[in-house]
Length: 119
Length: 162
Image 1 (cartoon, rainbow over the protein chains, first blue to last red):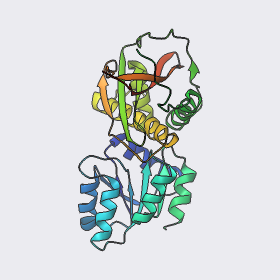
Image 2: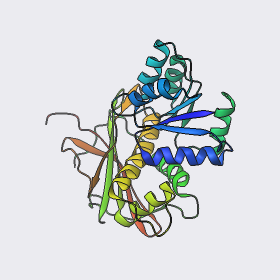
Image 3: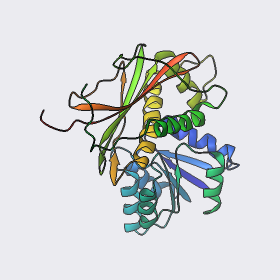
Image 4: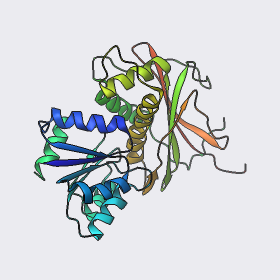
């Protein structure tokens, strides 16, 4: 499957890719976006099967990106990877149409559990 | 620095330490632990440093700051990027890594406090942290990791006349 990773931190994109591999999901085609606006465009141009997105990003944050995707009719599977794992943020994510929220810091097991819900 | 007024809710230092330890272990592994360092109150951070801050605003307001020894900031970046041992991290990579560190600590501190609140993007500096004169120190952790000093601080707005 093709996975789009959206995070303004190059370090965190690398950690997410490495953790996917450690979680046994290393064979996927990975594309990267630096913010929500770029992710929104790349969902159109790259047609990923899953978006793994940070919440806080410049240009467009993750929740606005998800809302714009759903408003445009896209039903791409979308999960957050964010330092904000409170119940309030999880509820906001779910009501906007996210399949899961992985809180930073995370483990490979958290990735495996989340990805198995959408693969 | 003035004391925080009692009505301002502040995070427990034990909770901030637990959050910091979780982030540290996830990023750097558990082969070396963070240990407390005795530093008298009011002492500025005493190392050549990188610093990063993130602001929480809304239902709870505060600023979370992480200050790191220069060599530790570079080691952290090397570990986070999984760079080969002979490869030096660039300054922009160090800024990215230190910013991500405060984002994780700050995001988890935000989850401890009343909401709803918004977490800002991290601001990173090569050098010691700057603190607003109208803020009051609510919590400070002085720690050591592999002989290198680390400081995590939480400041809250100071109430009353300015």
